[in-house]
Length: 322
Picture 1 (tube, rainbow, N blue to C red):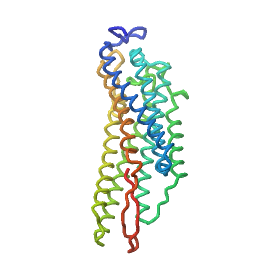
Picture 2: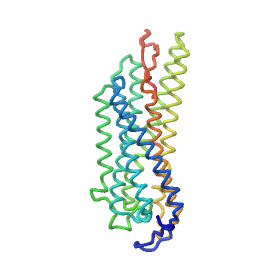
Picture 3: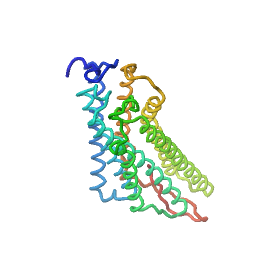
Picture 4: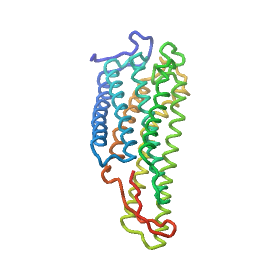
């Protein structure tokens, strides 16, 4: 690696200059996080495949989420390598970077769709338990996981179908060349708003249902310390999931908004803009590392028994911790 990278070489004028220590300080942590994330998500996938006791409907969504995070970490690792080899290429864009960004986009979209599917499944499971019937089955979660991948592939693959700015600098994103800024706005803003809203609504609804259930049980004198502990665990996990998603994706979301609203020319952009871009990539990768910890660290103990009144009778029910 040369001691100094000037991104103007062979591409025109720009004020961005990369030093070797800056490239290494941004690239090495991202590579390390990606490698750890790949190992963690591979472990989750192997555990779900090999463990007979893990073959529950929710495990299909957990496995799909782990596969999305695995693809995200791998594509992010590829982008980090491209950045460390030729940092100026990540400023001006290249065909290889277009392929890497496309795979990354598909994996990010699949991840957020799987997160929403898990949130909805958790809500339906809790709501159905209150009606003394659990209707979530394997084909439903399999259909949700398949649909998540199909929609993610459709929207994420649009750049390879022609919606890119390899030859149109005037419409290109400043942060994520050669992607077009209108494509990023089209994909990012609706999906981020939908994801944040869906996760907030579903997990708040879960907490409300559990508190209402506790009040009904308390009125009949059946509340146990075990129920209170489980309720607190569900509430805590729900809050962690929502906050983790917001913290991980908000920097990228705000970067796209800035990219769409700012009309500075490429020579006017400073190095800190691209440092921020790399940091947003690290935050997204951290989310793919934390997901298997939050969602699957207690797959073997995913059931917690409760006694809940339904039609003035006491029935044994299960509300699984997310």
